[in-house]
Image (tube, protein in one colour):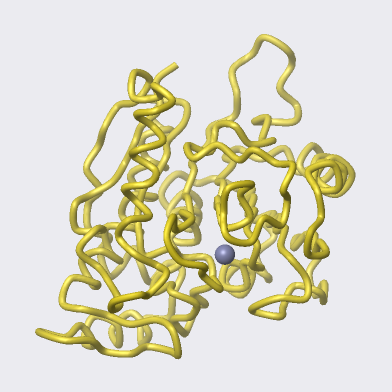
Length: 298
Ligand SMILES: [Zn+2]
C-alpha cells in the first residue's frame, strides 16, 4: 500500500515568534516519527501546490481571503487574532497547506493512491468562514472537502476530527451542508468552548472530560460515530488529526490512546460498509501536529 505524503518547505517558514507553541518543529516531529517507524518505505512524496484564491473561496468568504492575501507583511508580524500571526512566509505556507489537501483529494480521487497524508502547517480546523482563529488561517480540510464536492462531484464527504479542541471552524463552514458529516471529539470544557449545541444533525459532537482514557474514547467512537458513518456511507473520509491529546503530548486527553503520527494508527476503519477483504474508502489525512516542545492551547 502506498500513501501519498504531501508537504512543502514553505510550511516550515511560517512562524509566529519565539516561544509560540505552533512551531515549525511540529513538522520535524512528524518526519522523525516516520523515519523511526519505517513508514517512509510506504510513502510517495508529493509537493503541495499553492491553493488559488478561487479554491480558498470554496470554503471562505472572498472578502476574508482577500484580507489574508493583503495582510501578509514584508517583514515582522501581523496579528490576525490573539494567538494567530502572519510573518512574510505565512501566506505561502497557508496556501500550501490548503493546496496539499486539494492535491490529496485529487490523488485519491483519480486512484493514484488510496490514502494521502498532508504534513502541513499552519493548521486549519479553528479557521471559520470569515475569520482566522487558534493558530489557523485557512481551514485546510474544509477547502479540500469543498474541492472534492465541487470538482469531483462528491455528495457525501465525512470529516473525522480528533483533537483536544473542538473543530469549530470546520463546523462553522459546513453546519448547513447536508453533503458533509462532521464527527468531532474534544475535551470539554476547553478552548474554544464550543461544540455542545447541536444545531445540525450532521454535526456529531463528542465532548470528553479531561483525563478521559482510551476506553472512553473508543466507546464514544463506536457508539456515536460508527453508526452515523455507516448510515452516511461516505464517498471520501477526511481525517482532521490533532495530536495534542496524544499519550505523549501536552494534554493527554486520552492517555490510553496511541495515536500514530502518520494517522494510520487511529481508529478510522475506512468505509463502515467495507466488507472484509475489500479496499478501504478513500482517505485524506490532514494532521494538526502536536508540538514536541511547549504546551499549546490549540
Ligand atoms: Zn488542538
